[in-house]
Image (cartoon, rainbow, N blue to C red; front, side):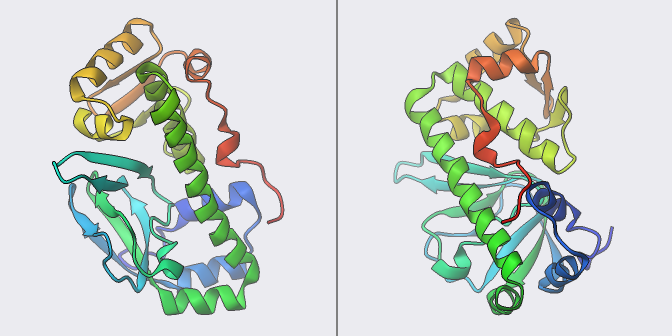
Length: 246
């Protein structure tokens, strides 16, 4: 696999092209703002709150997350990022984040300097809108997670997260309607869901016994996707999968 990123931004292009057309010229411009590929191990915090940032991070391979830690050591994961996601594109305007970014699995990243992004968005207004769309999509995902944490039962929020990841990974060619890889621990899943690991274990057992989904050996196996979606009241509209000019 190339270390220059030339062959590795296909996931980003897949994600964008589901929503709008990206021309060959725009594709070349996107490739031009990305630097060398870097590899990080699992459980590596590579951005900390209030750390000054002059680059944004494109996830090429693996899974990573946004998170916040409390003083007593409790952690809340606020979003899982999949390949093709710019994890901190909003740092381009904010210059620092109020939360941390951490790898959940071994990951490959390409970084884009903010000065290059500034030039890109000035010269390619359509790409500027598409990158703006990406940050709006993150906000939509955060709102849905907030609903889960505040109103959905433990069973419903777990089912909802499995449904969301099936769609988001499927968009970039990494999931089918039957299964996808999810190489995170049960504790990390609990930190996504705002539950204890013991509670998550009970929920996973119930989902398995209902013959809806099984999470085991770093894989999510879906037995009945329509019923899983019904249980979660999952509506993928918040992921804005419609293709239209933006």
